[in-house]
Image (cartoon, rainbow, N blue to C red; front, side, top):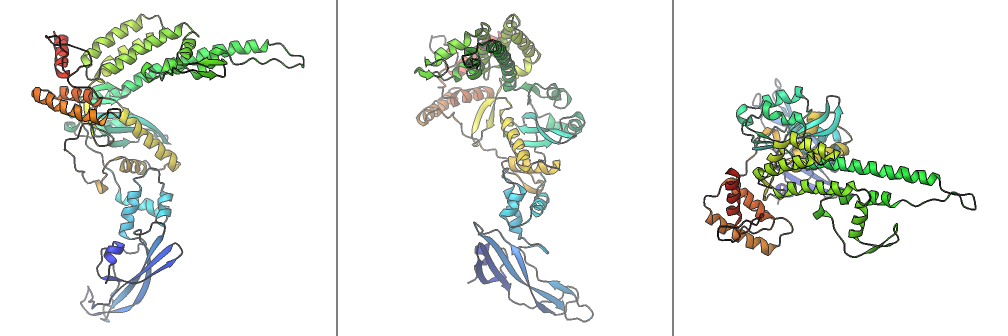
Length: 544
């Protein structure tokens, strides 16, 4: 019985297996077709066989650790009409003319490009062909088109340094789906302006949020192209700016103490053998090198160990509290910087879904920092004032698709974009450079999208409702209890708005009961108000 279709996955029922042999790591399957009556396609005369030619074809099915080759016994036919003498070769549906690989090989080669860690040379070795062939196959099948713009658009640049006109590529991402919309060769205006103006105005008007860093050119896109959108500055870049300033201050402070130590060392006496005595590293330099996280990290992120351990520098037992006390005794300015930094950190974490409350608090912070008599935070106050509204907009909550396909309620941010930028940098590094931006773009988009389609066909949109995704520290039993409470709240507030539901889902996803609220607000009877009731009390107070 001929099992060629199921064995080798070849869509041709006319072929049969003649023999199967093995030479080391190479498996060879010889195939043939039985002779049939054949007529000339030109004149209709009978054709006769001129003999059989052995044709060797690569086929990837059943490879594993073996290379698999097919040997096709291909007949050549000639017309018996002396005035025609038309000549043709036998054709097979699973392989093209003059090709050394089956059609299945080409599709599997294309699929291998989904792995950004695989180079063309790696794929070529895997399929026993040349890297030029696999690149030609990829370029033949893959031509990724721009995806439609969504409600929230992430914009960022990534350094690729392909040539003088393509140093920083511009990445566009759909914040809700997390998919890469497109990759542009440059962030310069002569590239971005014709690109965005080429998108229909109706599609650009659907964008409500434009999320970026504090680059003014990106923020100006709202006025130039996306007329219905509001600018959003990612909170990470604001904190990054402050962290860089604090790190610079710590480095300058460390250099000051190192210079002092160097002067002391130069004045050190000599021992009886004529060798200069070496002083150990000073306490200040030791602490600034190893414990600067006390200033740069959030209080809740610092792991404080109660138990003591022997410190080789101080030569006595110390715990986290003693390290912290010694660190902030180095300079009287350090505790002040910590307190001012922590105020912005608390402001940044407690106003999710409350842009109106954030607007009130940021104004108070700007005023406090402006009058702090500290150079770093006076500059920070000017920064907050310059980007006040885009920072406030970052506290808006939006439901998006998480990494596992679940529904996640989160603030507007460029966080998903940073992971995508990492993929672009890895692709550039692994490939040791690209000469064609179009190939680089297709390679990245083909690997980054969840369901890439070939030849520009439109992908199907998933409109199904996604389950609520809890944070990793929420126990399974707690999740089931909270889901039940969530159902009760939804039934109680049938008039719940979309934004209220987003804030509620974000609150529950962090392991909090919907019957409580983050501000400990009580109702008219003195009882703890549920989340929706508390939110409406705050909104009423802000609007009066």
